[in-house]
Image (cartoon, rainbow, N blue to C red; front, top):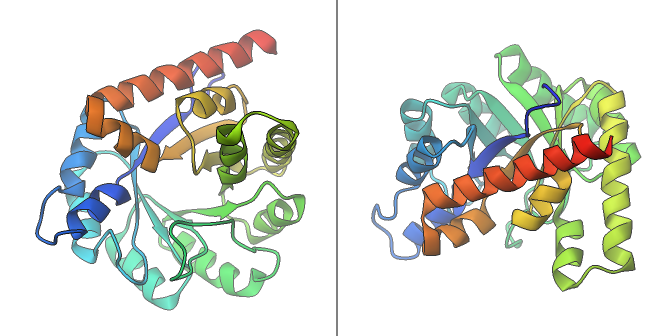
Length: 255
């Protein structure tokens, strides 16, 4: 990725499906939201097919693969069922994430270091099928080094703790979380991993993290779909891309 380019922007459409499922039926349609995001300049679309199908459904994944003209990032648990569905769907990428039925959203990163054997099998099966695998992890040296050992080409750094701390008000904890991300991103890049980031990002935090030259992609969902209620999907994508471009420009100026 050129240093002159801002990170790629992936849009997660899970929450459109959540709203649809609140009443059943077909509306609002996450595929329509994805197409609107792509038309406004999104570089990719992310969707998480959960074990309990609480938002995205199997047919949503099939339609996304068939109808969008940008890379599809299939978020999934590393289970036999999900690996089989991913192999049948053949998305551009698969992001392996932890998953618990009781959680409201993905609450933390994968414990790659503690489950190398099982994750290694999933990474190998997906990679052999030509699917680009990323591992959703905390900015923890132990997890980053384990991801590198598995030879997954990409890690996505979980930014939720930092974003939560920033929302509560920038303080010592927020700065500590930020420094952890900066250090982790640099380590991941030094290990030969492409580095993505996501979870909890808004315009302000996306702008700041885009200043890190190692960041190749941001994946953002909940905040953008919430903003889209007021200004539309297209305008939200344009505003996020502008924030990311400002951040990358500031990062170049500081380097």
